[in-house]
Length: 93
Image (tube, rainbow, N blue to C red; front, side, top):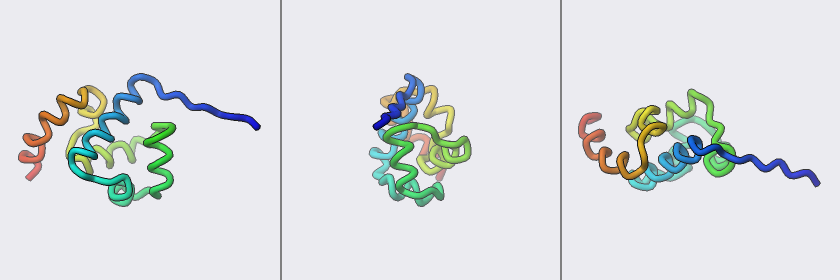
């Protein structure tokens, strides 16, 4: 049996942590995000839990769903994102 372990780099881990953290803060389930983005829940779960290999289009749609920018997910730590979310949600309204 061959095992193909996929290891995420540090940036990918931070982005995935940010997606998970903002999703939890906004009370958005994986199923809800997958449906909003337009991908199968199994695909979303595999990508969020194992590979982190979202397409550019998927990543942009995830950020939009979470009311943040893709740059925010890349460049900010989770605590900063959570602190700024109320302001971002007010601006988006």
